[in-house]
Length: 544
Ligand code: ISL
Ligand code: CA
Image 1 (cartoon, rainbow, N blue to C red):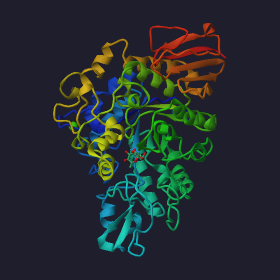
Image 2 (cartoon, rainbow, N blue to C red; image 1 turned 90 degrees about the vertical axis):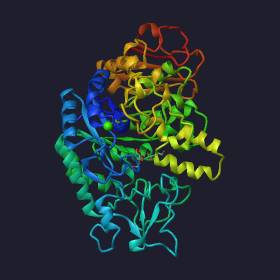
Image 3 (tube, protein in one colour; image 1 turned 60 degrees about the vertical axis):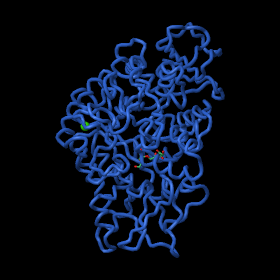
């Protein structure tokens, strides 16, 4: 099966995409309205962030009913209509599968916490405290301990994310059967695959031993890529995945390429690809909350490593943005050269070997929210971190950190046009629209020949035309440069040269090849000089 290799995925964050009924919240009918837009862009797969029933403590990554749609987004019938209209347009749909944890309002958990005798008690991970303390030293990804006290049973339960997201007990075969049923339900409706949320956290080491060393990093092998990961994934593959024409992309926190291959290597195929985050440290230390200056080498090095390590053994996923990450222009490009740098970043990331994932708004060069007061933010992680940081830093310093790192940076409503609320909603948007929508929006981008959006369209069309974009192998030049990104791709006698200037200055470089023998097939400037202009990106095609 290779269609996932030829996929160009567009991620929709439904709450912020398009509001049809004017209640300020994006919805399924809003998505249906924009399918022709997506078709026009040229994407052929959509990944939809969670739309299931949920109290929305973590904006849907806390599910209370896996078999129904949240009323904010519509009904199951709306969903079926959307899916068939996607398929009519040749667009596949992958759903978000969130099964490391549920919501604390899921009926399983409501039962589980009542009594140790409840059949659902074993669905979750409850433990007695140790000498009046928590069961172990595990930390939540959202800050603080990963344990919360449950009075009814005088125990603690595990939550690797917010305390309203209790972790499921994958040791329990009943839990695994429940998950398979959920998968079958959506696959039987015609869904084409899953993005599997924090999938490498499913297995917790027996005895739940303390993590050693740094918080979270020290959890490798304990609750990150734990001992039974392969057993669980093999079982899902055997009983479900292998029975459908579908693909999976596993979101894997703190994973390296070697461990990734143990899941995705062709022949193993427990997952088809993973999202890793090593390149997201290009401007921070392991977490966005510990910032450092962006250096191109820190972006290129991990990405190239994954290109080489996966080689022809495994398939990469290519992204710079998603609903958890601030906008890439603010991080790796330039607000001053917004148009040029957005095009350059797309050229750089999506021309590597793997499946491109475009996050909504990335294709028009949307930028960070930069709200000025904490009340404007809605994301649970942001609000938790704000409280924690405020204990150590001034309001001003804390807000600066929030403005840089918050997940709401990429969750502001999609900017469709210059009308009220950027055309996202007739009502009061659930999260404030970025005021720059007058300058940055879809409608103006469609009309402007030179827009980021039209560059994306050209780029996608090229990618579809030349198989070397999809299947070519990867070789990097000037790996040490902090200014220039340059790599080539080779396939069946064709060679692509991808050349990007990551600086705001003109840049001289030695092109290695005689460029007069190559055809310039993409350029984010009209000019074609020997040197590169600020944030210039070029792609050449020639014979190997
Ligand atoms: O976004 C992060 C921190 O700012 C990441 O650590 C993130 O929490 C991690 O990549 C897991 O993300 C996924 O699972 C979370 C959910 O909040 C994220 O939105 C989701 O992408 C829990 O389900
Ligand atoms: Ca709505």
